[in-house]
Every structure is written in structure tokens, then in C-alpha cells.
Length: 191
Image 1 (cartoon, helix red, strand yellow):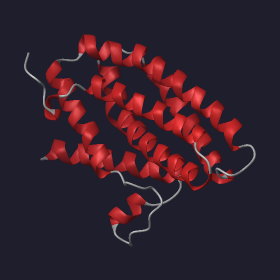
Image 2 (spheres, rainbow, N blue to C red):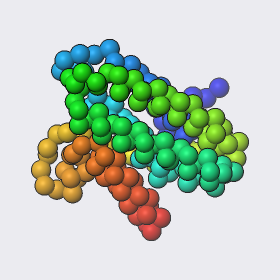
Image 3 (cartoon, rainbow, N blue to C red):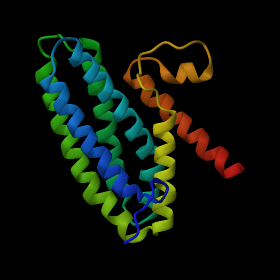
């Protein structure tokens, strides 16, 4: 058997791997304390922003094209919006707040349930109906989203367009990543 390079990776494998990283990151937030808890929470926000922006701009449209009903995709999008708002609330109260851990546990359970539904209801049909070539192409776009994402969503780096992409609280980060992916997809079609 020939080993696949990262350039040949299937988008479903990539996304399932990201789901595992998200689960691990949520567990790390729950186990951490003090400054480590804040760092772990920031890492999770970045990971979720990259993942969800890529899904919204790339995966959900592909799922719609490959036999996944609008109702299913719309429910996943609604869940993602709810999660973004919960993250923003958690960000606002801060990791040291007495209610943070309880609220975060509710958030983490919702994320786990969401990823399970996504894998079953969207990723399964993509495996069945999208060609391997298309799934590899989609994986490249998802990796592009990872490449343009900030390593930390809170570092101030200047006044450039890229600096604006890299800074701010969770909701702004999600929006900036979605816009960057959307712009890149449009530019790649025009080239």
C-alpha cells in the first residue's frame, strides 16, 4: 500500500482528525487552571474558529451538493452559531469566573454532540457521493484555512489587513476567517 501525502489527504479524514483535536482541547481546558486555563481556552477558540469557518464555507456547501438535505445542513449551521455565541459568553466572563467551568461543560457536551451528528449526517454522504479527487481538493481548502489562521487570536500585530484578521474576541475571529476563506475561494475560481 502506498502512503498518502498530506496533499492527497481526504477531507473527511482531515475533519474527523480535527474533531479529535477539538475534543482533546476541550478536555485540556477543563483540566487546566490559572494561566494555563486561559492559554488552553484561547487555543480552543482558534481551533474551533478555523474548523467551523472551513466547514461553513467549504464543507456544508459540498454536503448540500452531495445528497445532504438543506434541513440537516441548516441544523448544523444553527448549532455552530449557538456554539460561537456560547464561546463569546465564556470569553466575556473569563476563565477565572466561578461559573466558567459549569458553562464550559455544557458547551463541551454540545460540541461533542454536534461533531457526532456532523460525522454521521454530512461526512458519511460526502464519502459516498463525492469523488476522491473532490475530497482531496476540499481538504486542500481546509488546510488553507488553517494556514491563514492566527496562532493566537488575541495577539495585536499591527494595522494591516492581515493584522485585522488575526485579532479580537471569538465572534470577530470566526467572521474574519469565514471572509478570508470566501475571498480565497472566489479568487481561485477567477484565476
